[in-house]
Length: 217
Ligand code: ADP
Ligand code: ADP
Ligand code: ZN
Image (tube, rainbow, N blue to C red):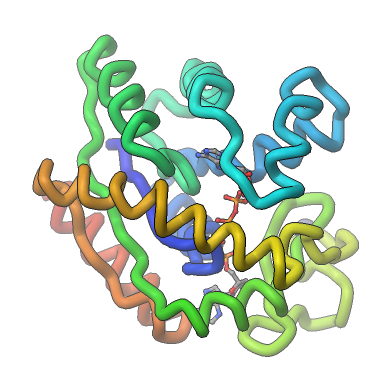
């Protein structure tokens, strides 16, 4: 089972991927988390990705596709994967299709989390991330029990530099230019399900689990 979560920055991909992975037992693969880990560790990949991320641009397809394909070779992905943040361009979607076809697999479901732009900016400006386990909080919509501390692991929470207004606006622009066509790609393939992401976290999760259940049957 291969599921793609696609939506704008702040649409709730990471939050919902966490819920879906926990319920379904599928592995959660988040391209942004992989890039941030590489930057933190100072690897060659991180060195390449860093500038693009700081500017709110996409990391080039070739680099991104290679990183994801390497991740998909790890054994925990054998039963299936929830892809969060990848693909983000038509070229990435096509590369993923080719790679899966080569191992007799395919994308079963693409879920598009639709959220109005003004809501996205409010979500990004209040987002806090656990430095240790990447769990995501929001200062208003999903506050941690203790301010500044992760409920799951006690780790320290921090804000992403690219969630600052100017960079967030650039990321949204990039989303409209480069990712909307990828959504259309999945719509034409007839595996796209649209979910109203502008509701509280639980009802969104329920709709997504419903879509997943429909696909499994
Ligand atoms: P968000 O959760 O806000 O959508 P991510 O954490 O997924 O953001 O991504 C952060 C940054 O990492 C992006 O702005 C981009 O620079 C890079 N990135 C993540 N996924 C991709 C991708 N599929 N293709 C290119 N760049 C990516
Ligand atoms: P993405 O991975 O698509 O960029 P996140 O899952 O990181 O999005 O969510 C962005 C921010 O919005 C986070 O601070 C998160 O806690 C919050 N959030 C996620 N889903 C909802 C929701 N349904 N309602 C309100 N806030 C939400
Ligand atoms: Zn944590």
